[in-house]
Length: 229
Ligand SMILES: C[S@@+](CC[C@H](N)C(=O)[O-])C[C@H]1O[C@@H](n2cnc3c(N)ncnc32)[C@H](O)[C@@H]1O
Image (cartoon, rainbow, N blue to C red):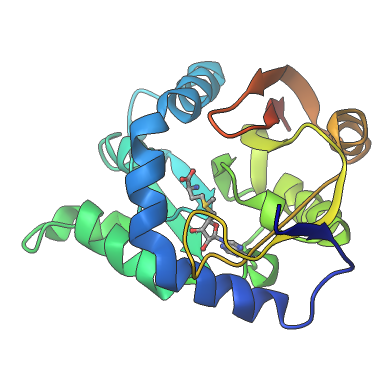
């Protein structure tokens, strides 16, 4: 297998961006048909939120939103809700724009903000979001960056807001594959593993309300977490 465990590679973010720019279509074609798990935990997290009668006050953030399907699309289905989608890849964001905004849909474009860049460089006011979502995306950050970002995510949540995400179940330190899904699919993952991830979430003051380990379509298991600020 052309995979190895290394330290954090140089130019990690540029390399990840180049990979997702090159293989966005391949990734999306492969993954969208397997959206059941994401939607299950997204719906669960939305179910925990005390949804206001007027959803105009709702504010959602998706980190590593990819092409916007199906998660950002679901978030936008709440009338008036504001959605911020962030991704490193220009190609993914161009697809998200095409998928989420019909040409003449001014109403949706007013409440959707797509931000290109490293999720670890994002800044938002404290208490801005009702729900922060990160599916299959935090795993592309080195572990120390995951810890730092989680600390910021807590602050970005409104009190009583929720965080829903998945992490690799096994501990992984800078795991690299040269050709994941595609010849151009150089790829990098990291994870603290189930126990330490849950400890970390509790340490930063989140109340973990769901933590399930589920075997995935790939040969790996993921820890799916819903946590409340
Ligand atoms: C495995 S895909 C997941 C996409 C989508 N969330 C899903 O569930 O299908 C990972 C996404 O995270 C993005 N990504 C990777 N590292 C990132 C970073 N540091 N900041 C923002 N986005 C990142 C990639 O460009 C890619 O679109």
